[in-house]
Length: 376
Ligand SMILES: *Cc1c(COP(=O)(O)O)cnc(C)c1O
Image (cartoon, rainbow, N blue to C red; front, side, top):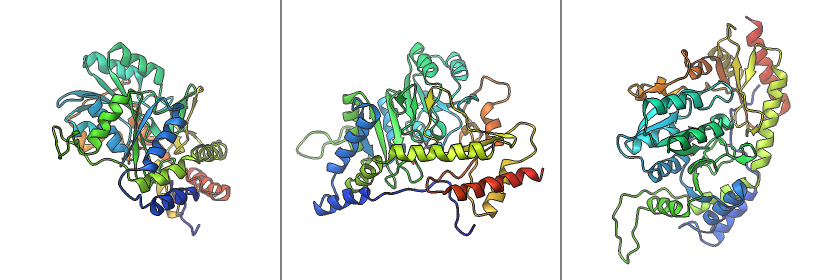
């Protein structure tokens, strides 16, 4: 193919420009304004009918950082954290001086294993915060994890950065934790070019996060500061992109699912499986991934190389955090003799999942993958 087939790129529709235009026409480029307010209200409405309180921020990472501050993480505190995830799940723990303890995945959703989490609570009783990421838009074993948090008096923070529009037993991801984060980074389900939101039902917590996100300015006639703050708010122009994108969030999810189903069908005769999910959940299928069967000699990095030679972008599975040099000192807890996530990392591959990819283009991707298996 002459045209590169990307992993995932922004898909825009036109309404975004209407909101941006309005911001320009009203000379409301800054400060915060109607697009931020509108985006927050519309997102909360979309997620759970407006029960959650949304705070629009400059990134999903900023949302996670403020969530950890709200949870009261202090220097030296351990935080149980998803091991196989993007590093942005973990970094904010370290910003606060917290110590991530990484928890292995299970095989049914590739997310945090409740059995390993239970082991972690036995090893480190009194741990107060659990950071759960939902990998590739697939809901985790949420009931089990919530039950463990409740049993041990821990706060759940949900990193739903990849899981907007996904749901677990009919309830949307991003509403299960006490504090939750979503992201609008460039390749997420919807994008603002860059941005994120903090979500919580606790109005006072949302107000406190807003205070920190705007340089912790005390209510005084002069600039009065009694705490350290941040410049974390989303701009009114950027929020306009988000409002336009949000109108298409379910459409994006449906197109993502169609991509997944075409891989499922097209690759069904090969010794591999697709990223799994539980029956009573509704993933957003942000990225379609394949897992090569155990014992099959095909190397996913070789498949990635061949795809790239055909101008097709694929990516490795997130490399587990306990394998990262920067976290070499951190503990990792698994319920299995051989860590599950190391195995998924070794046999898995993220496939192009752009919703603008045509059926013909995807057939071409499938054909190239098939050829990699024929040569074995
Ligand atoms: C994208 C992502 C983030 C961070 O979001 P940004 O908006 O890029 O800061 C956090 N966690 C996970 C799992 C992500 O995929």
